[in-house]
Image 1 (cartoon, rainbow, N blue to C red):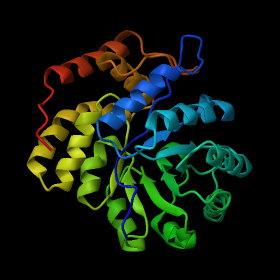
Image 2 (cartoon, rainbow, N blue to C red):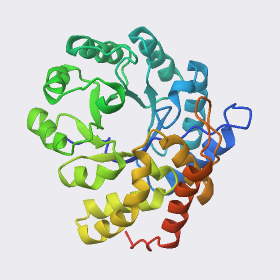
Image 3 (cartoon, helix red, strand yellow):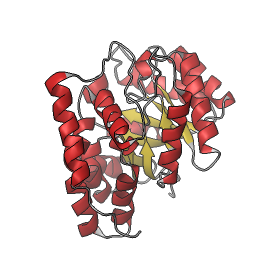
Length: 301
């Protein structure tokens, strides 16, 4: 099966003003920079987009910004991360009216659903829209594991077309392919497992540090697809310490600091998150600046 959901998909941050309102200009500037760098799609209002602090109106505003910035150049996915299935379905209906190309969908939050409940949640959201869905599987963060046999069971839901796999074990890519073949596009959702996952057959990368380093991220993917493994490996090894900033409870603050340093964003976050301070900030900033000093020259693609 040919998949259109391939390549590099930034899970973009939501930029805020000092009063915590949405900074429309900076949110749009970063999305435009991602697209100029050659990404294949944009995902808004995910974990990195601070979904837990956004109202439905906020999410639709961010979607509007992304759709306007994309100008049809790439698809824009709205993340659905709600406590209740009913609210998730309502968001799917609202997003379709505001120009979403599709959705990245989490299991219902807070309550840890069992197998039957998890499958019913995803089927309900899929049935609330004709748009395509990517199921986001992250048992480490959200406590619910959408296993390969569960994907085999939901394969009859035609508009469930992709998987963002973030279980933290690269072996899951092979397990998924063995269970469902090429039924779904598989995208790695863990920055510092992305090269390994793509080499094992993943179709793409839902990326975080791409928000600050879009061209480097796209270069790794394109080199891998071209079979230029040594060149991809060299960039990936340089990138690895930065990619580890995505695998952290402070991923939002880490990546927003990186965006600010490279000129692609601003630092404000919505409480309860607070910007990095003290030794923690010094360590992350030193890593980012050291990486910039040793940044490799990207090869022609």
